[in-house]
Length: 90
Image 1 (cartoon, rainbow, N blue to C red):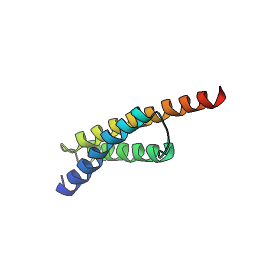
Image 2 (cartoon, rainbow, N blue to C red):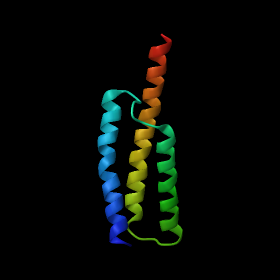
Image 3 (cartoon, helix red, strand yellow):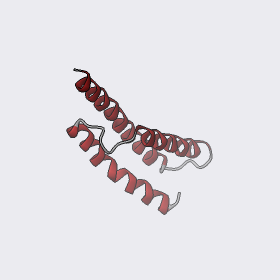
């Protein structure tokens, strides 16, 4: 386990609740990118798999927590996109 890895994951993790809150309240996809969110999810999956198979330590839980938060933000993005599409089509 590296203290720098922990700090990086904590810093990234600290930003996601604000992003989730913004997505939930604004009901807008403005300023978001589904491609970016999917790339982040892929990166977190890679980190989780690396920790699980090659370097297991407690940091895996930070990867899992961040993955969950990005997943929530991704689901909110999809919900908001559907709402925007329905509004445009009406």
